[in-house]
Image (cartoon, rainbow over the protein chains, first blue to last red):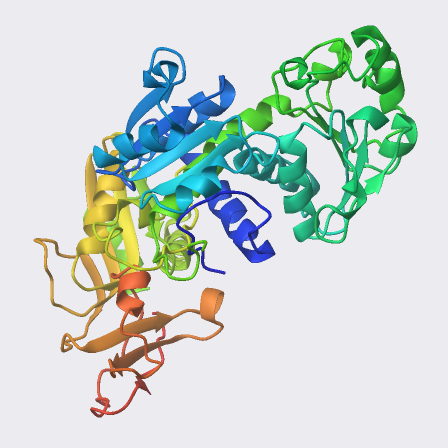
Amino acid sequence: MPFNRKHLLGLEELAAEEITTILDTADTFKEISERPIKKVPALRGKTIANVFYENSTRTRISFELAEKRLSADTVSFSKTGSSVSKGETLRDTVENIRAMKVDMVVMRHGSSGAHRFLANFLDASIVNAGDGQHEHPTQGLLDMMTMRQHLGHLGGRNVTIIGDIMHSRVARSNIWGLTKVGAKVTVCGPSTMMPAEIESLGEGGVTVEYDIRKAIAGADAINILRIQLERQKARLFPSMREYFEVFGVTPEVLESAPEHCIVMHPGPMNRGVEIAQEVADGDRAVILEQVTNGVAVRMAVLFLVAGGSFESGTPE
Amino acid sequence: MRIAHEIVERNKGVENLILVGIQKRGVPLAERLVVAIEQFEGARVPVGAIDITLYRDDLQMISQVPIVGETAIKNDITGRVIILVDDVLFTGRTVRAALDELIDFGRPSAIQLAVLVDRGHREFPIRADFVGKNVPTSSNETVEVLLTEIDGEEQVVLGEVVEEEQTPPERKGVDMPAKAKKKVAKKSVCGPKAKKTKKGCGKKK
């Protein structure tokens, strides 16, 4: 299915075929990063602004590398040291950047829906690099790409997401993306971190399981979320140590999962909180592959969003 | 296949050769050439594939982003002789893109071009070193090579671009232009209204 969208705001609005197109394109783009000259001229002459209202290492570097490997020109901008600290509004900041003739805006913002808001009046393409607790579509896509490489296909596969489901945009993008292509998703975490009506999220809903061993029995892939201390206004569990005792993924816990089950983590890891040292460095961990795939996925997204006619995909 | 012999003859052997097929139909053609060369030379020439989509000069102009195929060049190409293989040679723009892409992989000592069909209408100073068949065409005709590996049949189809018919005028834009290698029995000319007229069946020799 052709990809005709002008923006990538989230996986919720994509059709399964569009997700597959992105993953297929990303598979072929992975090879570019192996070449002696890691660069193709596909986005030559395009200018992309990376606007990061929240801290980021992986995502930001990954986007920047993806842009450079497609020969786009890039400018980066973060909250500190910019006019944002002088009180400029989001709309004004982005419109000013746009006035300098930027073709695409890659943005991370702490408010859910900030991208949707901008898409309503901005004529540049917008790619969501994470918005609040809503979605982180490129992370969802790179997780799916990594699972697909290891499991062959995603339809009918079981994926367990463990951790702070409530605050996690990674969980939301994973749930939307995976359920759309026919995978079964189980979520597991403290009940204080389980949002209301989580069961009905995604296409066909997800299973909720509070016992980690039961949650991963039969799982083809486990995606461990980071405990985001910076997002928790109230303490939702008694202590880090207690969280590790109950929901930490340790070698012993992993024994409940099938032999072929892979372990993923979007990073940055809190070793000894949500994931044990031995698991993070173990044979089943594909965490660094996820990072490698992230560049390919972001190249695919930028390439697909930059090209194409936009009639059918423009939201609103 | 005659082209296989010509390649070996021109390069006085096969030691230094690498065949690279241009996606999509150049790839099976390159593989066929490798098999043919192996039959009479007894040596297997390395073969690669290249997708020029990301090097196109009209990426910003086409409305639909094409599906990007695999690029797989396993060998170091520096100092080697590269035979680029495609099905139809037309404007030369595909070949230009392929040359740019190849040079990003290394510095070959030479690049030669083998095509199944040369249909003329070059827009760049590019010519083929090995041609299966020259097919004079008018610029509003289409030449399509069908291969068993991809299409399930072997033939070269000469067609006419018909406005708003399903013979897609944008086809040339969306697929990559140049292609090369089978044989066209060049005779039955398609009538002006004919969307597609089957030309002779390609047979490799």
